[in-house]
Length: 264
Ligand SMILES: Nc1ncnc2c1ncn2[C@@H]1O[C@H](COP(=O)(O)OP(=O)(O)OP(=O)(O)O)[C@@H](O)[C@H]1O
Image 1 (cartoon, rainbow, N blue to C red):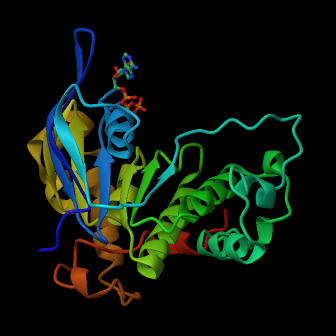
Image 2 (cartoon, rainbow, N blue to C red):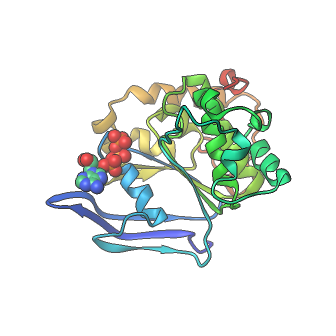
């Protein structure tokens, strides 16, 4: 086992009397894709913000590997509609970067055609890809995404997650994402953590979908969708996900093939 990139130990975050996170223990290792699911208000964003160091634990700790570079794709980012700002200029805030580097990260995020477009003219999916490109600028070893597909339709979300898997393959970073698109996101994950103030259950997507704690929170609605993915992946698709994930046929696969070509 490699050393974890980041470890939350007994992470507890309180605001007044409200315990937002209660003794949360999580380790994230190099190259894995971890999804955090949970109902509204269950502490998912707080957890990510604690991982990047934007919130201090009330008790417990967050330990990062020395020099760990983290990329963060926020839930929302407001752009002033009266401000002319191209995608290329946006990537240069706050540091100037070379044209070649900008083109590189835009290509990694599947947004190479957008460099000279105005930020305010982008569709939701294009905007998310640009935020992803920005998060890749620092060559992160850990990429955190907070509800990155909010507002995208299902094919758009599936295409975005497929892109995330490609990014992971290309640059080998670990990925932690928070999402409500349970069936899409779970299909792309190595591990799912179900959070509701504390960790209710965790494991492979299939294990979590079957867990009584998960079903109590989400019902059985996503089970059918997971079954669908399993079914789809009995066909012969590209399973080149690298050696570390080769052992479990159910636990790491692409989204619905029908959605894979969807353009955002
Ligand atoms: N700075 C704060 N002060 C007080 N309460 C807070 C603060 N930040 C978050 N909370 C509360 O903590 C709880 C968890 O919030 P958080 O945004 O982490 O949940 P979430 O799981 O990301 O929710 P959602 O799915 O709706 O985005 C909520 O009840 C929220 O109101």
